[in-house]
Image 1 (cartoon, one colour):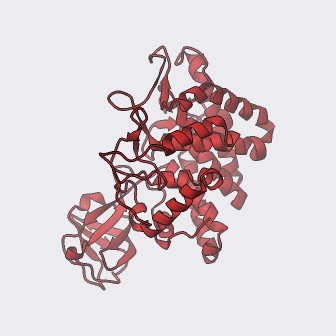
Image 2 (tube, rainbow, N blue to C red):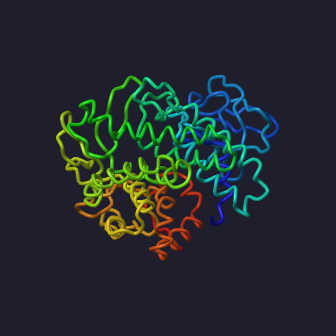
Image 3 (cartoon, rainbow, N blue to C red):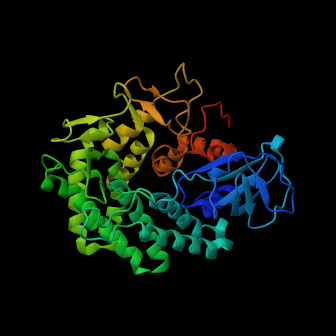
Length: 410
C-alpha cells in the first residue's frame, strides 16, 4: 500500500457506508465560534449526517444536529469562518441514495490494507472499530429469511428490495477480512451463506424455475425480496470469483468442490462474452438469447463492470490469454478528436465505444485506477507509475468520481 492522502482516509472514515457525497453551496458566511450554517438547499441534509464544511481556505468535519429550513445546526462550534465568495460549501451524503452494503464492503477493503500500513500505525484502534462498524452494518443488509430466493444475499441499498449477485461478490471478501481481524464468526458465516447458498442459487435456481431456458453457468443479475427475477447474466460477476476463491482455499474448504464447480461453470459460459466485450447475456424465454452492450447501437460498455470482471478473472486464473486480450484492447484505446486529452494510462473512461475504439464520454472513471493497480503492478508497470504520479499530483480532482479529461501533466 502506497502513501494515501490524509483527505482520502478521512473521507472513508467519515462517510462510509454512504454511496455518494454531494456539495451544497453556502447562502451566508458562517462565522467561527457558532454552530449554524445557512445553505442554499437544506433538503439535501439529514440530522446525524457527517459533513465537511469547507471553502478554498479551510475545511473541518462536523455532524448535523438539527435542521430548520436551510439552516443547519452543527454538533460543535465552527473552528473557522467560511465565505460564500471563496466557494463556501457543505459536503455530505446524498440522501437520494443513502447507505449500502457494497460501499461498506469497499471501505473495509481499503481499511484492511490501512490497518497494516505503517502510515496508519497510530490509527489502528479507530480503523479496527470502523471495520467492525461496517461489517456489522453489512450483516444488517443480508437476507436471513430462508423461505426467500434472496436468502444469503445483500440488499442493493438500505431501502432497496433487490439482491444482486455482484453485491454478494463484493461483500464476501471484506467480511472474511473482518473475520480475520476480529475472529467474529458472524462475519464468516455471513460470507459462507452468501457464497454456498445465495450465489449457488443465483446460478442454479433460474433454470430450475424456468427463469432461464436452460442452465448456462452464469449468475442471474438479481432477485427481489418478493422472489421476482432479473434474468440477465452480467460478465461483471466474474468479480465474484475473488470471494469464492477465498472461501474455497481458506475459509470454507469443506465446500471447496462446490465453489470450484461454480467458478468453472461460470467462466465456461462468460468467457466468450467477456473476450468480445459484451456486458450481459439475456437468456430466453424472457430475453432474446443474445449478448448485449449499451448505447443506441450497442457499441458501448461501462468501464467499471469490465474492470471488475477483469480483476476477478485475473485473481482466478492469472494473466491468461483472456485477461491479456481484454486488458490490452481497452488499454490501447486512445484519445479522439472529440476527446483529445484522454490518456489510458491514468485510468479508463466511464463509457467506452469498443467498436470505434474511442472514449464515449468526457470523463475518467477514477475508480478504475484502483481496480487495475494489481494487474498493472505485475504486467504494466509504466502505466501504473504514470497513473500514481498523476493521481498523487491531482489528488483533489481524483478524490471524486468522474474528473473531466484534461491535460494532467506529470
